[in-house]
Length: 453
Image (tube, rainbow, N blue to C red; front, side, top):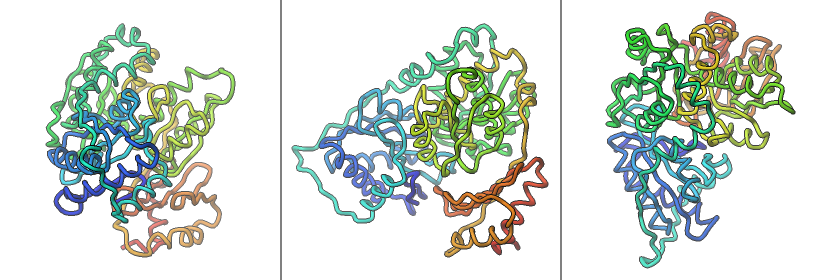
């Protein structure tokens, strides 16, 4: 699959070394349209297929004249930060994010750490399909270097922006599930610097995921049990490239990815409340309205973009937002970078826990909650064309937003139907005051489109 989120495919089937090298050539030529000899940093998550895809991608980049610095195993936000640290023109992350082990992918980052805009992503896709390559002469090929400083660079980017001393004083205990992904080393460094006692589950970056790697409740039973067993203050779960974060409270209850951004925004907005001007937060159309309630309570405002990190980041930059992200557990904090970063979420939630000096479950209970239901179906030809007319017929009394699929809004609930950027599926997401009402919305939307049964 090729989209605004990059390339993703099944190893040995849709994603082969030939495909990765071709994509590297397309990406390299896109960067060369901006500068003569682009410098690109390349990192990867821990999947066993990572080295193969990485080498093929680097072959494509160097073939068209790019200079490459390899970072080894690194989180996606770590790669973004290294691009800025090394003053590179861009970065590449070999990762399939939360997808199972048989998947891998290639994500492109610009010099400022953000993903390319939709227009820029389409330029890369067009270059890939055209397969018209301008190879450089051997003497023009640039060196391939190695830099292993990502752990320290990431730590130096996050640590100055939180009150490390107050966190150290509280002597907090954390259980962390790194799912044998890329985030373990960087997160260990952060937690050590914050004086946190760590119980680490699956920290080694083997890429052999001990459970389905998407940080959903059904995949985090061991984390929840460990929080209770070790009497921890909080439990954190990362996905394989460590840009998403899910949270388990001090009672062992999974509070969900939606709360990651909501609680982080609550903390940041509280710190800025009363400052000059209205604080702006940005999220996508499929994220919880908890953020809207929190912003309203603290004199802020929420803007909503199309789904996709690049779309959120672009809107944040355009509106000088103080925080943003997505309801999949991705927090973007401009003080660090314009990429979803699980270390940012961890640092903000630990600071909030230390400053409030109350158990996490008490803080969570203070936030008005909604039930969110997420369904998906395999996509078929013509299905996306049916979304808007079907939903307008089914919900004539609602407000509609059509910038990304169709979102239908009422005062206290919404439903969003759109095709995925990363999988061949149609997503149906609804939120309402209770699960029964949210489920009813997804069912109504499905029935309107002829998807039931």
